[in-house]
Image (cartoon, rainbow over all chains, first blue to last red; front, side, top):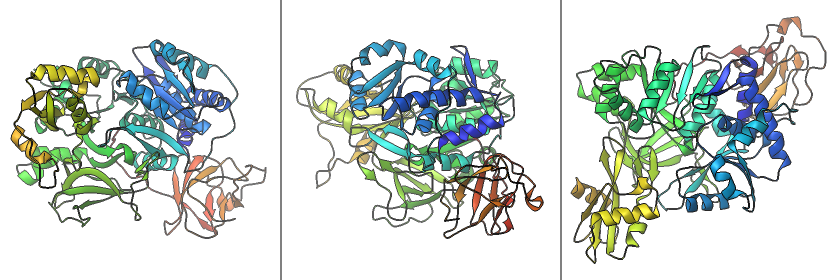
Length: 497
Length: 101
């Protein structure tokens, strides 16, 4: 198995069809051209001593070329988060050398003398890939080859590199997408960043279904609405924060006036009921789908489909109506269980940790091995429950990771930074429900010296990405601990409400 | 032919068909296309497609045997049709799923 096989099939099924369009850069690439470009780049990668292809860049035509070229060359593809700070990026790059690094032209100079890194600007990379060359030897079909390494934020601070093998990604696509299922005029608007599993899944699903992908590199609701109109977008994926902004952008409108938008799927965080209800009013003819998944599961594992959305929205019965905030039922290739802390399977309605099993599930981290048990079950660290009809509801994280605007962050990392401030003696950081972000970062701080909340916010900003800055800081006399000294985050949250 | 492994890619020896194994039962399996054994080496050797196995294969379709234990994906179409141990393989109906990404 190899993701290249998916592109090969698409290129043979619809060679002339446009595969990717970057409207802001005014460039596009057809399926046959994408196949050829992947081959050219694979030859270059094989000729280098790179063990990884790293992409530190926004969405652009080079992203799908890089993803498929690394599959062809037989080296892992490593998309990096361009929103990280320079020191954070440096430490990730240290973990993946020797690497071929593709990045924005402005960043190239900073990596030129770096040991173990062969750097190329996006422009050169795409240029090199698109000159005609001879196709290299075929790609490996070994299902165990690593396709993608994706850095994810965990509870312990330093990012873990999730290992997705060829078999995981190919199984996901074969199990969830119909080959050439898209009509000629179908177009997907992809606005999730390339370093997010949803961004990788969007590339692979669109290619296998033969859909034209319109790339939107830096999301704003205004641009999204504009492109959706101009390009007659038929399908799109957004995280809840994006949908919330789109709904705001269309404020006052009776409907979005996008009859061509057949389907709008969302995932990556908790969707507020008010947002999805308003969105369904604004897009009356559009099929809504909620997709729940994780990096470690090669994206989507459960789906709340369009019919369930309409049924729930129209129902007067609370048990059916609340399914609008459910993440639906497992994909055909996925089994799901809710377990308590002792590992016992929970009955209907009881909260516990979500476990999943299936061919698309990896659960493996580089250098740490697999967290999948002997029977193939992967602990998601998400908590939830299943209702009588089998609908899954997510209820926070089993391990307290904060999910803000689709971005996972570890409270421990933020606490560590705050604790370094001389005036802070103890701190608890939690995610609190937020209409805008799904969860907002909030801190309860015990201080030794006088300090203003603004000063602590500035302190976090100096040391971390701005998304980590607590929106609200409260000063407490002490934090709640249990008798064994474990911080009671649940109690912190209750007191912060 | 020896046992089949998921992910393995095989070619017809009498037409352009290529397939990938999605799942296969344990044990030896005689997989044929166009009435001739398939190979993981060089493909089309110039032989003829057997008239009894000439319905053709379709790109992107999945093929299964009667009990569903064997499942293949056609990655290149051709004139021959697929069979295993003399049993003709059938096209598996695609599941209709909502678009998720």
